[in-house]
Amino acid sequence: MFEDLDPTTWDIDWNVLAYDVTLSALIVAVAVIIAYLVYRAVFHVISRITRVSESNVDDEIVGRIRAPIKWSFIAIAVTLAAQFDASLGLLWEPLAQFLRPALLGWIAYNAVKGFTAALEARIEISDDPVSMRSRRTRIAVLSRVLTFGIIVITVGLMLFTIPSVRTIGTTMLASAGLAALAIGAAAQPALKSLIAGLQIALTEPLRIGDLVKVDGDAGRVEEIRMSFITVRTWDERVIIVPTSRFLDASFENWSRENEKLSGPVMLHLDPITNVAPIRAEFERFVQAHELFDGRHMALLMTEAYPESIELRLSVSANTIGELWQLRCDLREHMLKWIRENQEQALIRHRLEVPKGHPKAGEP
View 1 (cartoon, rainbow, N blue to C red):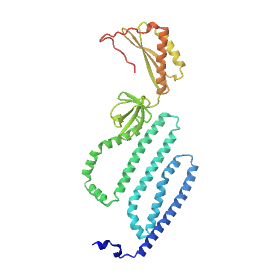
View 2 (view 1 turned 60 degrees about the horizontal axis):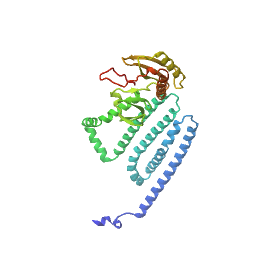
View 3 (view 1 turned 135 degrees about the horizontal axis):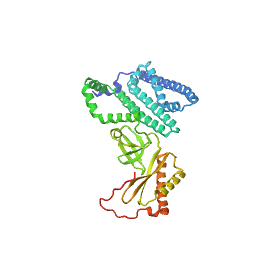
View 4 (view 1 turned 120 degrees about the horizontal axis):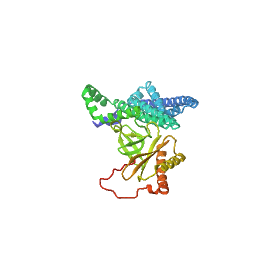
């Protein structure tokens, strides 16, 4: 039986075999060279066209798909060469069945990435922050959905080129009802996250860059993914929130339309306080402050308790960060002015009676 493994016993004309191998290699080399020259010529023309174009979208896409297109040209050339060489066809065709879906998936994946990068670069120069956040959110979510779909389809097509896998797939299709129920039950969390991500991209209850308050913490939305959303707070903590949480429960979005907000500063003073001079100083300070946008300014006595009164000083600013700074400056200035001009208005006692008068908090 071991005699069959001895090459000297094989009925092979080695000269003919060497000639066939050399001829096949020569055909492949010529095909690759021609394909490369055609690729260079085609992309030379395309590059000249993209340079004339004013948009940078085509430049980004062409740059991304350049590598997969080059290998696709080579694969097509070798496939055509295999039509004229039976020996080359026997070796190349099984490999080509695996490479074709891989190359198509590579082209589609890079095209989506290039298109996404070009659109993100264009929206960075937008003067409207709300519109910019809206576009960034849609681009990020939809590009992730497309890339996920491309990867799944490409891997599926590559696996179906394997005969044993194709047989399993045919058997599963024959029992599609039970398979659909099993897959649906197993993939329910993933499908729920996918649908939630698409809903957020289309309806936009929040966007990348929005300032939101969820579960008592406020922060900026950094990422919107299929399964979770990251929110970074002012102290640099990152809160990971399931995507479906923003659709199933309520949350606060402080920059839904724009970042122009009004905010209060609460002062708790003695009932003997003379409010009119405090209002005059409040208006003078706010009108002179560089962060005040001129939209809203008011001082109201919102509560009168037996031992104190509550003054609400509300102001507005163009952005949330500027409003926060304005409120801090206003609070510090008014307490300083009251100490210097109405010292009797400050509450001095520190005794608290159990079940005494209610305390009002400042948001």
